[in-house]
Length: 455
Image (cartoon, rainbow, N blue to C red; front, side, top):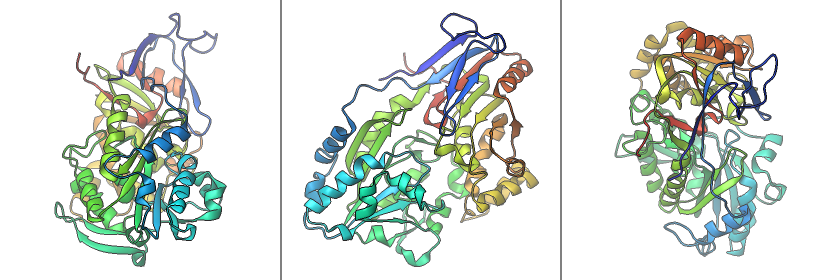
């Protein structure tokens, strides 16, 4: 089992960086926007750096992809799956996930065409959920391979278009309506692709999650994002046991019959370090088993000051996505502590739906806002992210550093604004009378646990 790095370091000690006359010795690089952000820790801070352990050495990406497609989990190799099929649909995540689509789309499509599926019968479908579509240069960046864009259809999913979906009934477990994009449902070969990482509601992203909510109708998405799911204590990061979202997603993909998935894991430099292909549930669990030991980090204590990020581009482009960085470190935040989040938010607050939910939160306050959610069977679009923000608000004080978020956008965040990370950390240390500071450079890609863990 890999062991994560929790490195205590008192500023000024040898090995903690080069000293400067006006700033402290220790500097930490946070994921922030496209270029990152260098954090100068205050003098005297007892910094506990929480990072993933190093991934093992791995083969070149092309070899990893080829091997995964040749040696799948719970299914035949992709080349065999193509035989007798006349159409295919490949799901890819939208721009909010840094999935290395450019590595695997063309190899998969070439295997499909060699197996007899015509190019004009292959669709790459962007699993937007209820996010905005990815178009123009953004689609080019997302796909990452001009050959794919030139040779097959690449289209967006639109959850609000009723006619685009097939009604498959409701789940037996919790009565969630199963309405999915017909381009995926009606394809003879169905493949989801994605990134497996901690997810603050569904346990882990990837696999079944790319299908629902990825290409689900808004009623499906709004049902299992309602308060009866979100307030369930099992709906949390790195947990699949009894997680209501995960259980509903499993039932939905099983209703479709044969569905396959290509799951990837990347490091903090966006390099491919693991890839699994096969039956959608088995291949996803293989990726979860691999990544779990690199993301859940036993720390052994809680902190009154925690500094984190929103994982940089593309996740930190909106405040909507920034909420994920507020939720994942809560296990190590002391009650009444200060949580400091650095997120660029270059695109602002997020959708108009999310802004409306944030405005209600600011106007009503957390308790009254939650009461409005508990009576609903269908959550309003994007208000579930505001509901998730209630979790850190129940624990402590939230402070946001964003170099681009406008005053009007920040007014509806419901959190405190800071303009200097160094000064905010120093102020938190003074306020709590505690020099210990936990710093999580990768934000929600790392899930620290207060327990020390076995051994």
